[in-house]
Amino acid sequence: MNTRKNILSFPIFVVVFLIEESIFNQIHLPFGGFSLFLIFSLSWCALSTPETGAIAGFEAGLLMDLAPHSQGSVGQWTLVMISVGFGIAYLRYGDDSLRNSPLSLVVIVSVGVVVSLVLYVLVGALLGMDLGSTFQLVKTISGNGVWTLAITPFLLPIVSRLHGLIFETRELK
Amino acid sequence: MRQRGDNRSRLLFVILIVTSLFFITLDLRGVQVMNGVRSGAQTVLAPFEKGANAVFSPIGNFFSDVVHLGRTRAKLKRLEDQNASLRKTLIDRKGADAQLKQLKSTLDLAGTAGYTIVSAKVISQGNSTSFSETVTIDVGANKHLTRDMTVICGEGLVGVVKVVYPNTSHVLLASDPSFRIGVRIAKSQQIGILSGQGTDHAVLQLLDSQSSVNIGDALVARGSQGDKPFVPGVPVGSVSSISHSSGAISEIAEVKYYVNMNALGVVAVVVKAPLADPRDILVPKPPEPAPTVTVFVTPTPTPTPMPSK
Image (cartoon, rainbow over all chains, first blue to last red; front, side):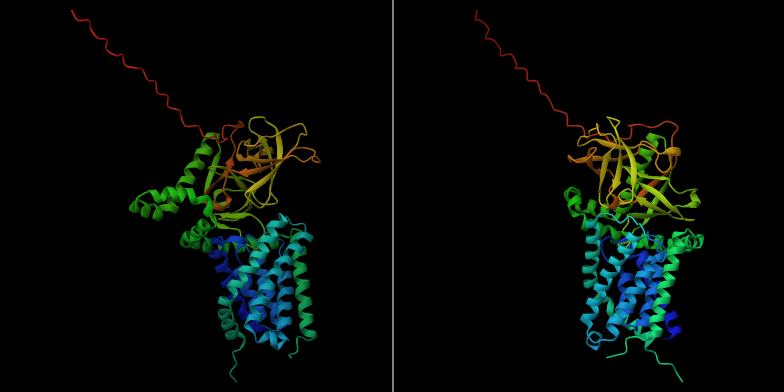
């Protein structure tokens, strides 16, 4: 684990978070739309080692908890994103057949988005959060999953390049 | 096959999980540091949201129009009937005109009831992962706003101020699943509780088992003690359907909000309620039927032939 590289990834997350909050929140897409930041951070985790995935999940979750529209407790998204980030990285890192297939990456990120939303709802229910009707929840979560499947292939090259810039740079000796 | 993780990575995972649980505990216990951090984040984000709203709101409006194509079809039909140059001018000025219209109707509503208001512009709407119906407005503590103030627009109730930041405020919309408001049926004066459902409809539960409700009945806010969080007399919605459940203690009805929560542009925060309850004066009047034109036809007298001399 390289602490310096993990710290370097945080400003990138902040920039994507600002883009999400200031631009993408202005656009209301059908079936709940998608979360650019969630897709970006889970794609980042999928490209990382389990340790880096957990740390990236922590950074992303903390930013999502600080979002003005977040209704849950501070720490709720952090808990979810650490678990899903670590899980995705763990699942993908050890399996070379999954690691070398871009299609599997898209599917893993989409499933990760759905799982993280479901986990958020479950943790919210445990903490006594008002979540609305089941139909609305199912519509939002499934809509996010489908949108993620459609968006991730376009976003992956950018995430992959940024990830490579930070984690694959060799230090000069 | 790569080594998936050693004890160190598992230890790191556990440490991070414990840290997040620690955050949750602090937040649930109401530690001020957490609120301060979130307030700081909103203060940092507000200028970005304002700037992006100015630049990207036409794109957002475009997608909103596509999503609500059915509702705007009649409006589009009318626009198509106008000539091309006028239509182009209208499209260019559509955003500004809509906001001006919303502001005018909001001022009309507030003026009729005697509410003292602070007008505000919606600068951001809740994202898809928040599972709540919220908007952010561009006024906050700088305009002396406080928590639990009623937010209205030209058609009626929008929501209630939940969090006040230095330059912005967070408004919980009436359509949010956690939203509850005491309402009164305009004509019969029966009372009930209206609950948001996360859609453009709400559910009304009457408090009195002997009361009944009719389709089309208008609902207004009953008002709260000290006018917080709700000032009295604000129109909320009208009854669209009634559920006759044999097991229910009192009647349950579905209510359609007067306000379209997806098309909020300009709203107003009620900072002071009038001394007297405005009662039902804000209830929207039903459309008047077109006057029937009555034509009286009087037969012209036929000239009688004059007898020849």
